[in-house]
Image 1 (cartoon, protein in one colour):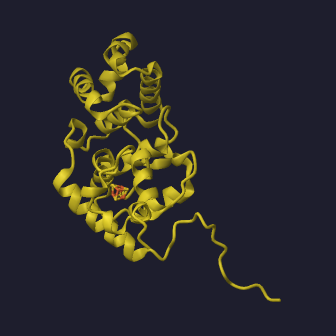
Image 2 (cartoon, rainbow, N blue to C red):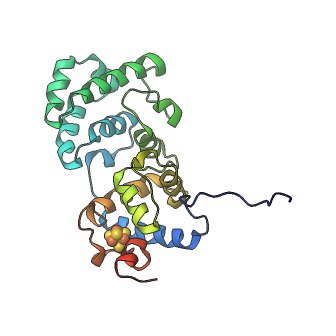
Image 3 (tube, helix red, strand yellow):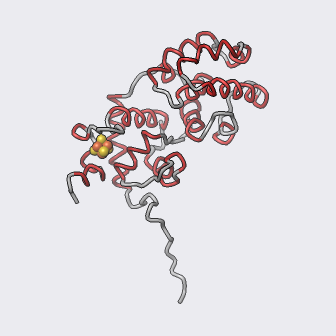
Length: 235
Ligand code: SF4
């Protein structure tokens, strides 16, 4: 029997037929973001050094906790060269309230690699950024979008939760390595102003579609959310 020319699609693959739902999702979240995006010091700049430092500090730490320390660090060491020249103990002591001693080590290692391999300029491609100590796919893409205006969508636990609930995707245990979720993150992002979009999604996950007790009653996505509809048994 001749082979049928039908692509084999995993039942966990993001459904390509959901274009209408994707557009609706994007439009609703853009509206929400315009009204509700939070303000942090690293969001008022697109300077690559500041953005990279912010992302490294934000790992596993609440933005409100990071904000004053980020500001202090940028005030003391306004350029990458200033940071590279500072004593490690001084930086370690400044970052100590954030915990994670390895954070300081990674930051300083990344600075050295940038000085040695990129003449002190923050690299601008995802592949190059991924070579830096402490930089994974989320940080690399966030820097690409925020500092260099590239259409690079991000996926963190907040974004993963929203996508899983709204689209009914099963991203498995390790969300950051889920091809389904990365595909979904890429597909739902608009073609332009992806940095603004990324920030809106992160804020939406922190304020509305929270890990515990999501605020479905006031959620602008409620009408078409798979998770909400399954809870109230709507088909
Ligand atoms: S309806 Fe509830 S579960 Fe669905 S996206 Fe909104 S907050 Fe999240």
